[in-house]
Image (cartoon, rainbow, N blue to C red; front, side, top):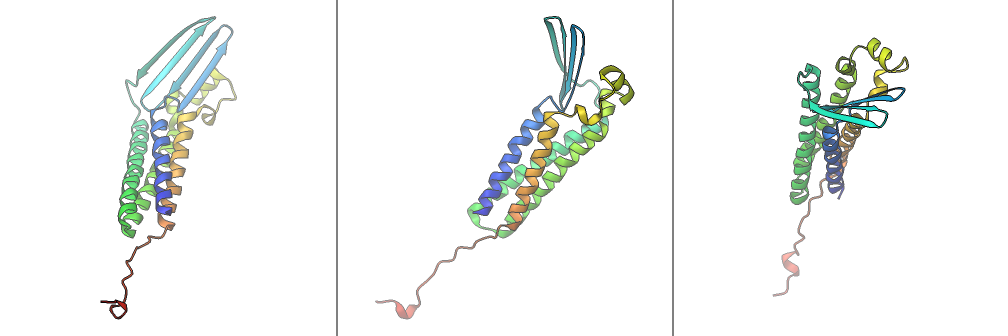
Amino acid sequence: MPGNIAVGIACTSVVIGIISIALPYWCYLEKSDGPVTVKKHYGLWIYCEESTIYVKTKSTCDSFALIPEFFEAVRMLEVIGLLFVLGAVVLGAIKSAKENGTIQHLAGGLAALGGVLMISGTVVFALNIVGLVGPLETLRATYGTDILPSNILHAGFALAIVSGVIALISGCVFFCSKSVKVTQVRPHPATLNF
């Protein structure tokens, strides 16, 4: 039964991880200056900009023309981590059918490794975000002096952390759950009536 719980937890991590990777809200900036409002948000695959002057709004979204190296690293860590957790789900399902402790531990290792990779991706992103949106001095001049890199991280980033932590929890549940071996009880031949 705990193995099934671990599979459910890992499935939750996969779903949240997919949403996180797909969201174009890993980073969000907004500036209002009188009637003009400019909003920018970045995801792992696209960036968007929305400008509003009085009531007229113009929105554009596009993929990155030049991708910084750290961005490739973040994408790789997030996607590979997600694939590891997905592998843990598959192995956990196989383990539930076959009751194999080795497969259970392998699933736990994959889930834990996937969680570590996803969390590592968020760390790489957070440490390098200033390089994506511009130097901190420029950000403060444009968006105000209270802007910090941690103030611009958004929902996709947070969901990636949540997905990684849930994957780690899933790995722990895989490791902690005992494999139950079902044995068939056969009656002693002396007790059989022929």
